[in-house]
Length: 565
Ligand code: GLY
Image (cartoon, rainbow, N blue to C red; front, top):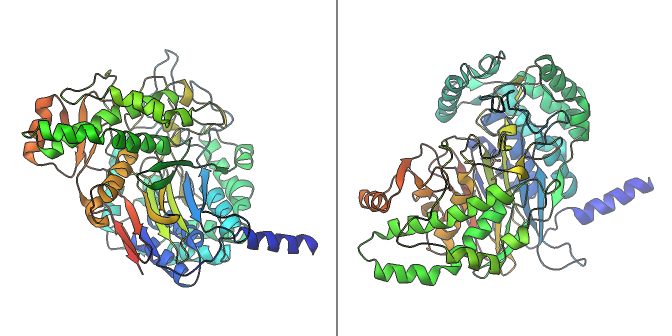
């Protein structure tokens, strides 16, 4: 009895404080998750309750990236717990996948030391130990205010009764079926389970509904130690997978200190390692601010160069330096020392800024071309009526992950192992390279670019932002922040504006989406850049608030739905 009372008392202290009622807003990647998140908030749930409901709904209605078999990151800002501390509380929950115990550095190399094509991407050895169920469970344990079971009911209903398949989901399903064709010697069961995804038709997932019911009844224990754990391990091991029941039982989501830094009178709160996102966005924003006087001077000197071409070159110069640091220094902080403070220090960035060239392209070594066009991962942003905010990005890595469905449980497994550096200097599916900091080791987390970010002004939530997009996540979040806060765009304009991306390699290549004016493209080509139109460049979900109201926007590139009230 005493234990229960103590638990309730602690729960009350730790659950998010209800402050004065303000505006609330959501920016979600599809209409089903938007409906669930809004309903939870309108019924008095807080931002974490809404995130839990939406996270499970997306595992049903957005199977490309919403997941039970993947992992992710949640950045949270909450009102202070009264009488205990003052100031905003910022938290970061790392529920990234981990390498199984049996994984080792050269797991994906053949006897000649060459990378075995697609082994880290397709089939039964491509998955890390999933973190999503534990992440949503731990977020709810610490901050949730509505019953867990009730929050899962939205997802259970969509799985049981079906949902109407959006056209983009059918398109992605077709693309993926053709992409995995012939890439694995294992018999994959993706088409059996998801081949019936057809635009406008209802899609039901009875096995997934049963799994969600077990998780609703037993919490994370079902997924990591119970019936779902047994189904998962049995299927992977039958086909030569590495994951064991011990791997699942040992999985922990981790509360970490978020990356925090000041920028133009704000505090930015973002993802620490094992994400490269917070550090990279911090470097980009700080370099951007440091070099403003120089950029203005260049505008005066270089009047014949289109403004957008100068800006794109400027961004590419910053991004070269940031992605070089990413490849060298970033990895799982439980395994390698990541010099976060130094990488974000003014002294270091002053020095990095000095090398930026205005009339030529800085040298970069070419290794191999990247492929950065994948619609993967998904993000949502939520602010509740009490000013608490959740920025959540989670993923299976590529759309639909490894192509392996846990048959009896009805969910897809991730192919996150490809985010490790399979061999130093060899690019992953997003074209980014890594070194020893991100090599494979048992239980290690693979480096990520996911960057759920929150900006605070005068102690209040001003912006909640994030996106999918692999290595383009970092540059998309950077550009959206600059578009709103430095260039004065409305939230929707900031998302719909063309985005550009450079990541050191391929050498001197700038990717863009949706398009750039011809004069801008010609000017960049004349400078020596090669240009590439990316079919895909993120799906940003953005909430922007001032003291009295919020605005929300969903990227024109996706099927998101946003609302503020
Ligand atoms: N799987 C993409 C990322 O974590 O960056």
